[in-house]
Picture 1 (cartoon, rainbow, N blue to C red):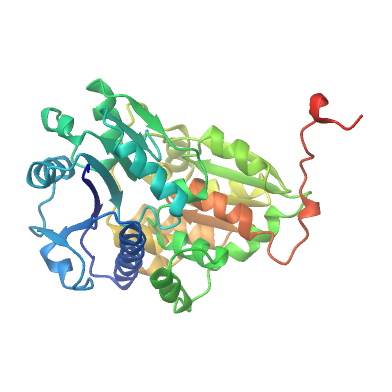
Picture 2 (cartoon, helix red, strand yellow):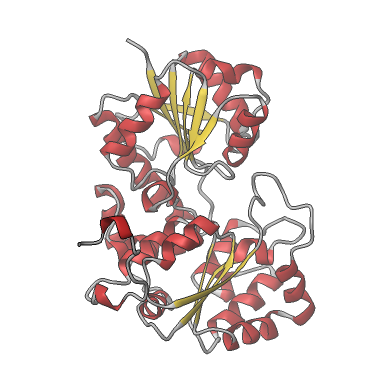
Length: 376
């Protein structure tokens, strides 16, 4: 029988309270995922820094890496040499939290198909993957982070495919906003749901954003790394009108060679004026702040980013991020701040959660006319 192995990579915790919260959430999601994999007879290995290993249940198979030193590609190749799996599933600890039995079984079947190749949840910035005949990866120069794994394998000639975009495949726990969206949707495994129930502080703008999604007269603005496919899907889920300014796609997997237009405008006008202009153009906005505020592609520490997401400017050291967060908090329209997931998996979840206790008939978009299926 062919051997299959699932590897879950979990990074280090930060020192701030909000970083500790995010690490706890990813840890809970990883343990839920490992339980689901084990239920299906798929062995799972958790890879984490030495300082994190003791925080997981002792029954979990753990491989440790030195604190402060980690290269995704080299670590993955070392594990392939040591374990010799014939099929491989690879997850970040924030990914896969919504995958069901059918999804996991489909990934497992692909990984054991016997012909080299890979399937990604997002080829352009992967969070999870199924890899068939992983020994082929030993001759490829793999990237230091998982985001660019798809590019590396495709450039080496391996056939690569992508999963259907939906909440299950695209959602990744990457920012505090993702936790609030997940709580509003009431999705996730037992350990993750238990953690979310203890998430006592309410999000200042998410309820208003969800309300606007159900209003036909409202205009919702998207800013950031939004896939056109996701945009088309979400338009069929919500009632409001949508506008969007897409920028920064691929910033983590392949870098950005050009000067981002919105980021340049924000610096020229200043965060206050930029946010006022944004507020005057819509009734609500969902903003992927990373490409907007990145300085030459570089981001501040996670504590600053996460504090911005929950509108805590007093905890932010970076002056641009602090000023932008203050302006967004004072905006006359609700603005939701986060990372890539707020315009990806999180957006799908919001499209579902906004209809709780509301009538689905209020959706704006009619059904497709299909002449061959119309009653005679």
